[in-house]
Image (cartoon, rainbow, N blue to C red):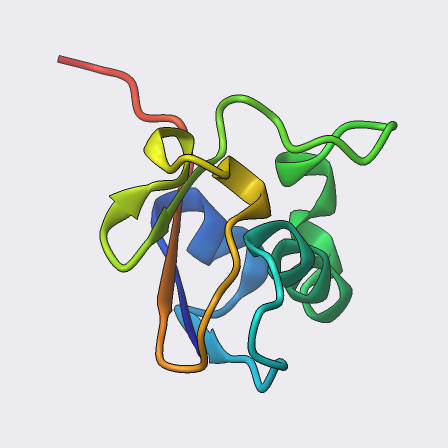
Length: 92
């Protein structure tokens, strides 16, 4: 599974992307936990003290915003899926 990081997430992690070898059916949330285990510098930027994903973290599964998916962060993933993570964006 391909994971792409953008903007400040890329800078914080020191990586543009990573490849995860996870079992079929793992959820987006479980993938996030695996990403944070591999890239711990992202943890304070992605989750709060209760390990809840910050509202400003924008995750996408195959180009679809996780917040618009019926199961949200609990959406099951397949091996060929692509995850993208974007930080909040401001400006005009």
